[in-house]
Image (cartoon, rainbow, N blue to C red):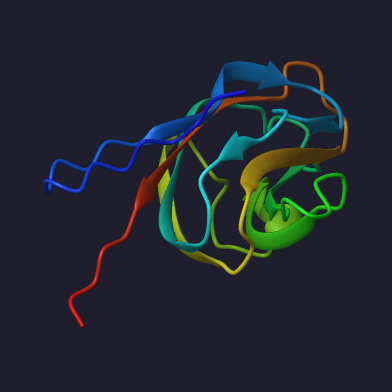
Length: 137
């Protein structure tokens, strides 16, 4: 199990949640990485995405748990990618880095789960890294 080490000296390193992997079906992408509570910037680096059939949808959930109930996972963030015909966006999603902030109210781990819909052969390839967000009070 990986443990995040947020550096207090201002040199904020990220922790890898998912290594670069191709997904063609529903998958829980990691066992969980210990990070604790707080706001985090999630970076999803997509290096391949299949949209050729115009019906592909890739739903990536960021989930968290508590130390007291480590087998119960709660969705704290979500990224939905795919063909424009399914997402409703003007264009198909493409290879890129997608970033969003999550506020993790739980005290233990985070992980990713990917849900895949459509006529998928090669699927989606991505990695996920979480970075702490520090705020002055």
